[in-house]
Picture (tube, rainbow, N blue to C red):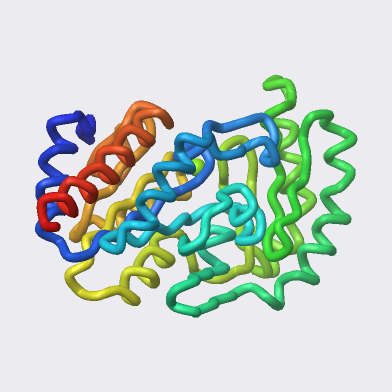
Length: 268
Ligand SMILES: [Mg+2]
């Protein structure tokens, strides 16, 4: 894993200048917005929103967000049009341009309701932990609890969901300080990346930036084509490069946006 230094970025940007189209796919939390205590707080900084907006206005770029959040929630947080959204780790795909909607998990909603009832007592038992109902998936976060409780929380969480796990009725995904319960479908961010890429011209150059364990499948999906960047260094990651933090991601986006502008000025 190499640091995505300014000189490496320059090389990539040069490569991109030869591509007729760039598909820039990004995770949201921990990538575009710093990790916050509760998911509701993760608003986009106005400078990040500005640069993303500039990129969406550049016809050479297609921007997509692939996130664990729901499509509705991410639309609200982004406040941007013309962005492809892969919600619930790509289980819900929404694209303004392709007019393609893809929802793999519609029938899963009733099971979410059942599990919510079963997991609710954990919120009172472990203060600070909370459930997040994403309609077609359910997340349980424990990052605000006392670290001494972590192992007890894990035991109890898995005890409660055991019947569904045994019946293969759910898929449990480990997320940062929590778990997410999803439909038992073999689907992940990597498959979502491939799905989106397949709906673009062959010469499209893809870039993916993410920070979490759930982003690894997306890094792998771009192993033979495009560029994958992880926010934060991690030895075992499948990403080609890493950036140190969220502000460095924004800087790279600014570099990308300016490149487009320069080319437009030269060409016009
Ligand atoms: Mg993330």
